[in-house]
Length: 123
Ligand code: HEC
Image 1 (cartoon, rainbow, N blue to C red):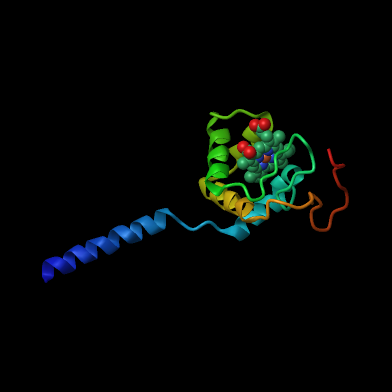
Image 2 (cartoon, protein in one colour):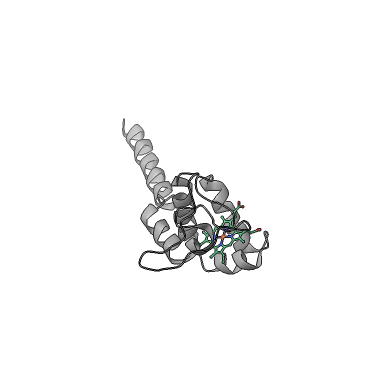
């Protein structure tokens, strides 16, 4: 009986540690990152208005996070994204990837930040 309790106790310790490491993605924090930086090229709704900038809405979360890590560690090279990813922490990568993944993969580009005027011409 005591042995069983010890085993159960150890089990929940391991679960707690894993839970802390795998913090849930914060969609609101991800949205804030998009509204601050990414919207200019990838659109507020993850649909880009420029033909050279990829749509990210509805893309797989793990794929997006892997690409951002690859830009950050230099294994994927792009002059723009290398600079941008360099400023993202692991938690921010998780949040922004989850946010883009949560968006509808269709729709028209919206790249106008709240309270600002101006729009990229569709390219
Ligand atoms: C100044 C324009 C610009 C901004 C701002 C920008 N990106 Fe990008 N992004 C690009 C371009 C261009 C590419 C294509 C890179 C390539 O060809 O490898 C790209 C590619 C990506 C990719 C890879 C997509 C794929 O299909 O593999 C991800 C993920 C990404 N960006 C995330 C972000 C995030 C997150 C932000 C905001 C923190 C951001 N980008 C801000 C221009 C931008």
